[in-house]
Image 1 (tube, protein in one colour):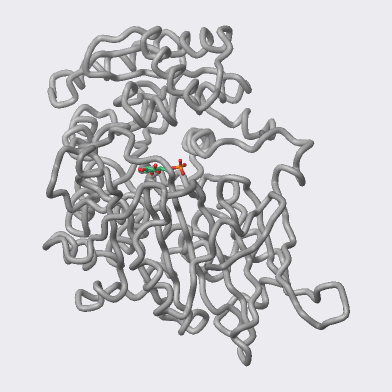
Image 2: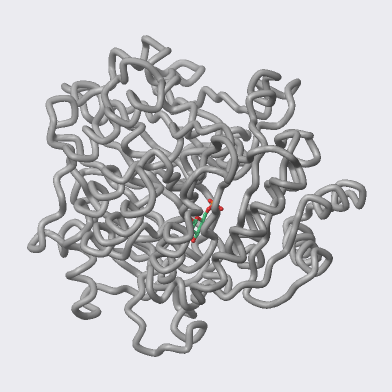
Length: 496
Ligand code: BG6
């Protein structure tokens, strides 16, 4: 990280509500551990970890280590100690209004000890159902204001889901808005903080070969896939309420689509990027109730109902939708988004299919691989060596691993999220308007799917999901680009 960014980080207290929850153990604490290791935190810094029951730093960090060990990461005892020294645990019943005054006193005490006014960041790593009472109490107890002496920022970091549907999203917005200004609210979409997602705008606008051909004259269709091989990993209550459409499409995938299709912002500053992103989201035609059957597919992996102990569960673990963007650049270009759990592979990528207006059979596929094997590949048609004129698809590959191997690994998405919230840069966070526009696009699908189980296809764990998703693609004149179109590997290409 450039030295000036590090120096700009003001004294900060990070309050994490739900510090022992799944999100915190899996993503947040490991990211903070990495920041400790790289010495990338503000010089004056403290974490206040809020849990429902008493818990020691040691217990908390053992949980984190266990989760990290599951993905093959080992912790350095010295760094663990350093992290532990930064954490003050607080046991608190978040639904008891009386306890917020005590929290405020605790934060005041930390500032008194340090002798400085500190920025206060409140991270809601808690179930969305209790966002409202928690935020109301923060507001009522003046915790949404500056520090006690002097001027410091108070920011609210919110994890999705930002609402459950359009109406509840508006409601949440109003409640948050009563106590926090839009400027103070950081809505986390960690996909935006992935290095490859950040590259999308630069890639599109800095390379004339693509900048000039990024429209319906050259592009035949766009597909975004977020496939996960894991299931719901014990998050029963969350997933039963949420499902794949809300979990990934309403948030991450519509945000990625906006980056791929928005008009060029005047600058890459937060305001300009958000302006164009919102324009784009508003120009996506919402799926009408009578089009849900034709344009949306859902599925559930075969062991899901047993796992959640609900034989009638309607929660989809797979969702695919077809969209159209109603503007001159994208008119007539079908767009497919799909996501699912318990699928054959973990892969997130964006396939942009170029073709000749006069010969749609000739294609060049540009694949932006968000993860894993981050990179960009362009499939070209070349003549096969030999005596005939036969052409064959081959790939040109840009692979982060190879091209930037001399540099330190890029920051994990949550490391980036945390640093950006510390320094008050909102470029990679979703705005309230974007959240509402995204709910509007899928609102009818949510309501139609809630009515009954029509079309809910059970798919085999480890497969590529419901057959109906292939039909959805075929009806749009497309075929899903399969991940055996390898990016960053020795490759063979196949479209299905
Ligand atoms: C989260 C979803 O937003 O993203 C999870 O709630 C999902 O269900 C996760 O597993 C995927 O994130 P990543 O970074 O592992 O691709």
